[in-house]
Length: 532
Image 1 (cartoon, helix red, strand yellow):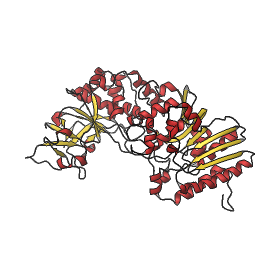
Image 2 (cartoon, rainbow, N blue to C red; image 1 turned 60 degrees about the vertical axis):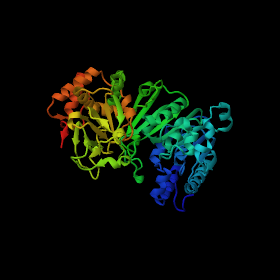
Image 3 (spheres, rainbow, N blue to C red; image 1 turned 180 degrees about the vertical axis):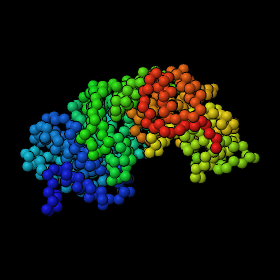
Image 4 (cartoon, rainbow, N blue to C red; image 1 turned 135 degrees about the horizontal axis):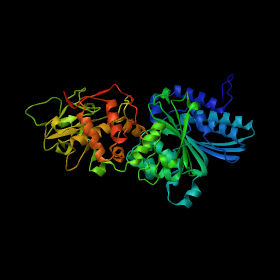
């Protein structure tokens, strides 16, 4: 309960004070290991306000409750919209230290509701949410209905951290998992199975689930169980959980068991302007093709991004349709350390080792020393399994800096640049190539220009919510006709010195015959392949 002399009008106000006090007394290490990033009252109020009234008796679940601020805000908003007599509240939290604080908040909440003539039946359980509800993943519907409790509202800011494939929770939730999962997606996927027929799910999560191979199984299950009705985007990465030093692209979603024909998308810079959000509405089929294998969720933050999605939707072919593939660099440095050489040695057969830092926008620079990273790899029988034939490639960074203005950064690479028999491409790069053949110079320049353009960067940001650029995601991007790619390459090749604006203008001229994308960075110079 509140300290003497301090009064709080709302349970959510008290919950926020409790969580701030707890967070200040808890180590960063403990919070990180537990995936704890506490929710502010501004965000919890926004999330609670998304909920729609139902009956006068309601059930609520928060599967990773923290200090229960989300449920407090949800209840406050619901009783302001409708007449409620009874609330059944279940809170699950695995951290015993947090539960002590949660109990203080629920005591305050219960007393506050009692004054309004509303009864609260609250259950706080210290257990693992995934393992304790494993029955929800069974295919036996009758078994599910008998053992699994379902709810009108499930609201959560779930923990965020990667878990091992051997983790018991992963074994239980196999239908949600491909590759290395993040715990938040298991919370989302399981919660979608615990809703009543008219139930609502309201979560704040990273947007990384929207695309990518690792979340493919999750999306298939999640979108089979629920339908998204609302999405809120925060443009700023670093102002969401600033007290916890988190750089993450988070979104708030509301999803229902009932199918929604439209999705409302709201956008704010950060928390401060949350209630002044710009709002747009799209047909569900415009943002997600539920009949597709990938089920990628596009999240446009403005009209330009929405228009860009439509441009790509009109194209029918991917690079694969042009006999062009994308793979990830095979050289993993620590596994190949016996073959790595820092400086060129004339009496040893060496291949250039290309790293992330060798790839600039439209520019390949080699050698380019960075720290202790070696520039060469021994070309021998033993190392052939990680080396590639020296031919024309497009090199794409797999990771972009959080401060990079462009998510996609790539450069053309021509075999004549190094003249060696083989090359090494490090694992933090993707490379574009033609199997059993070679890409022409025009194709190389055209593909490089497209991936570095404002058009492709804008499109990529509508579904990719992190700094990783996966080969699988690139493979799925629809491309303009090959003859258009070649024409772009011809024009780029003829340019002596390119600026970013010129690349955009060439692409606009070839693809749209008009200025489609206003360049955001017109002062950046782009050079040819440069061998230092």
